[in-house]
Image (cartoon, rainbow, N blue to C red; front, side, top):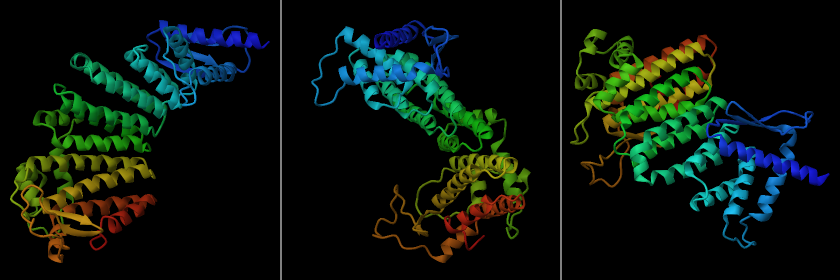
Length: 445
């Protein structure tokens, strides 16, 4: 009886290996719930480029493969490791395929696959395909993503491949990330893998148009967060994309506005005009503000307070404010439409933090232990004689708190907080406390 069971398991292992080796277009693997084998046929299912295994045999197959791996191919220090022959490698690969498909969260088994790749017994491209199969069933498997990054690192070392196949490789990775994120909510592993890809691309590629990619990824993440308002893992990626847009070129900025189908400057001035403080001396209309140059707009929003000899990049500063206000308006709409979602309020904190940081940088300040202090410029070092940074005086604090941009932000946040309170959203109260006691606005709100 035991021999029959072992023979059946061996047949299952070989059938799985046969499907994996012949069908390069496989894109999904899963366990099919079947309690008993009524029809007395192989439990390995292959239909329309999908691989399946009936659940009744999972326990027997997994224990058989895992036991043999530990007994014959373990790399524990007590056992002498021997060089793997071609025959042994074929058997090892078959066992690893089945075991990792069923339970991919065993890092030591992935290490065995790394050894096989280094020994040229496994192809890197085939391995990328195998990890995609694993992720189709276990989309949050960090070990599979880590192995995938290791393979990509190894592929990136070949310069010829980078020149010829970098775009195809990146598109394939984005597809894998999309599939993993679709299958499992709050999948930080897939979004972090996506962040790693973009960061890696900055290092390994000099001919790839990163600015266009940043625009594309930001637009994709914006669409995603509009449909998954409780998935903060994607909001985290969207925040990464926003920061990537800060320094894109002029052509990419125009492409961004075209992709979003929106004039970012008009979006900004619309918010400004509707939230100007009452005591401001210049009441500019939307039409007037649209015609302002970048420098004039910044001088209107934030009083000039030069603390060093460095030139201010007004174009870049305006663009940062524009994209952040666009994100703020989108956040307004989501909060009004999808009520009582904590994720939206946390994302709002990021947007406001970025806007306030821009203001502090412009005024040459930083917040340290809840207190605003002057920040020495690292470029011109005007204040290098001072050994310590003194606390900033009340006069300098008032210059920030009385600036137009600061008052616009405060007025805008008051309105959204009051509207949300009327709808019974208790996260509005938390947001107000955050602004008062974390960002230090308790004296002005």
